[in-house]
Amino acid sequence: MPRLSVYFVRSSLIYLILGFTFGGLLLANKGVMLSPYIWALLPVHIEFAFIGWMAQLVIGIAFWILPRFSSNSPRGNERWSWGTFILLNVGILCVVLQSLFGLRWFSFIGRVFEALALVAFVIGNWKRVKPIST
Amino acid sequence: MPKLTRWFIKSALIYLVLALCVGILLALPIDAPVSSLFPAYLHMLTFGWLTQLIFGVALWMFPKYTSAKPRGHEWLGWVTFILLNTGLILRIIFEPFNSLSPSVLGGWMIVLAAILQWLAGISFVANTWVRVREK
Image (tube, rainbow over all chains, first blue to last red; front, side, top):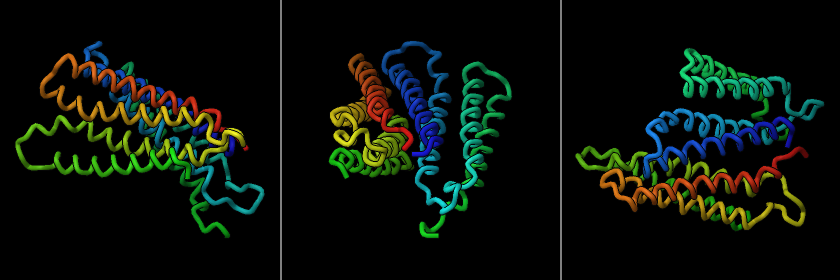
């Protein structure tokens, strides 16, 4: 597994724990009311579970297993995918900061970062979606 | 494909079919209290289907832990499987019922479901973390 995939997958595992923790609190709060404020964690739970855990895992595994080039840079220009890793995680942080602390515009900025992260990944890996032998 | 992976994947497929059936119920144009199933429906798809499928495939495909223990502590994988499915089944049963007619037992069963599902995540990460490494 390449170093960048290790970063992606380990980050996704951290978000899995965070997402499950927030989700567990939300569910437990439905059974036995712990605090009325816990419901406000729902957007953070969704962000951690969908973007942090699932999307990030998929990207990390795709970077690992998509067909490689027979050259000195088998995964193409990796800078695009490193950019994806940084943009995606800064984006998640921004979205969560608005959800938790009500910081205006942070969610918008975070979503832009997340979209740019995916654009960078597509640019960096588009040509790797090919028959293995070429 | 290891036995535990087959259990994860087949269970994931069952949840997918069940979720789609619940989706049909939710779409029925009748006045029935089925909307309380919506959170369980979402989690059958995202947790029972997607997450469980990922757990099973990761257990199978991730770099080997050691040549003697290629999939780490296999018992921990089984613990994850049992916790995940017990927690989710409890949720599917008690969350809709408790929203229709709340009870102390129902409430605590939901708390138990939350704890079991959380522990499933922790045990998966504990067994998987060391297998995520450079080769």
